[in-house]
Image 1 (cartoon, rainbow, N blue to C red):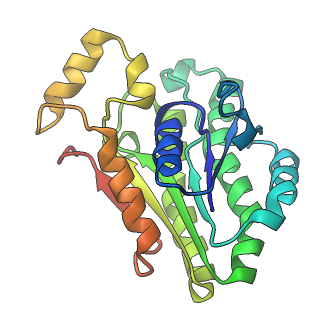
Image 2 (image 1 turned 45 degrees about the vertical axis):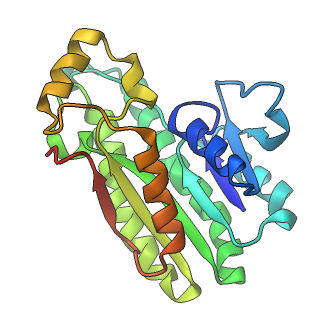
Length: 227
């Protein structure tokens, strides 16, 4: 079974549809973006920053879970120079991207440990590596995943559980589609290949991590050589 948070849009939606086409059992969460009537049976509305909501969701589907892969795609963003930042909006990014991701991991780990199998895949970002002005909240939330991943990997490796991050560069899907065209043009100029990534590269990397039992506690850069 595959669980995908934030599966109603962007990368989460793409992965959800790809795994469905592969005849996998896939369940997803949404919060602000309704997935549509044709998919709603496979979705649950969950605010992942609310641990009780996450715990209740997992409890409801617990009896169905076997050989679980958790893909954490739910995310939030807020752009502002640090000295002008709205504290509540800044904190909300941390609450969704970091605390929310942990909430879901915390809820499924007991099941994975009992079944002695689990794959956890988080999404980090080139933004946390480069130092991009205006992205302190997003960068902090994504950089924090690296340390959390290493700790959780060490705690659970003997139980057949792996946890890894994919550090994404700039792809033609997700939040980048909201960037103004002139800024996007400047971003593309910094990429050695001079083009945005295609989502198939993300899907291939996710499948590699699902099928590998020795990639654990690591972060894989998928950014076309951009540093």
